[in-house]
Length: 144
Image 1 (cartoon, rainbow, N blue to C red):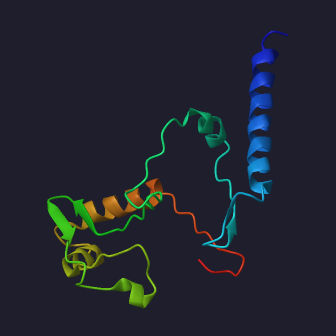
Image 2 (tube, rainbow, N blue to C red):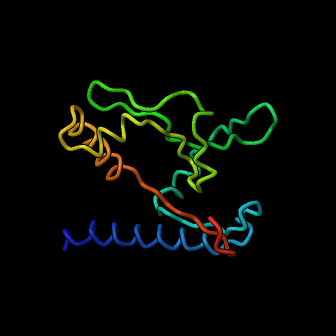
Image 3 (tube, rainbow, N blue to C red):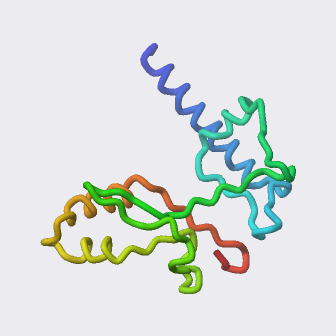
């Protein structure tokens, strides 16, 4: 009988975490008016860490900094692809957001399996695809 007690406690704790995450999703006060989106819980483990927050940093305007990551450069093998010149290509005009990358050499190496650096770029792209989580969020109007 003693072997079943720890397993049942783990199950109960996971159920409690699930219900807490459900309550987050039901909370109407947790609503982003700018994006027209309610709260969306992606992980039930974060709610227990909310009580550990001691400091909130803000920028000089007093609003919290919005972290937007852009894919601009990468290194594979002995080559560095991409450039720091942001005015080179504006991919937002083409409908691509959060990517500011353009490098003809990278595309040539990736499209030719016999190129010098194909294997390194292929491995790097596979790792990026497997190890990076992308969550697409849409508001009630169906906009990204």
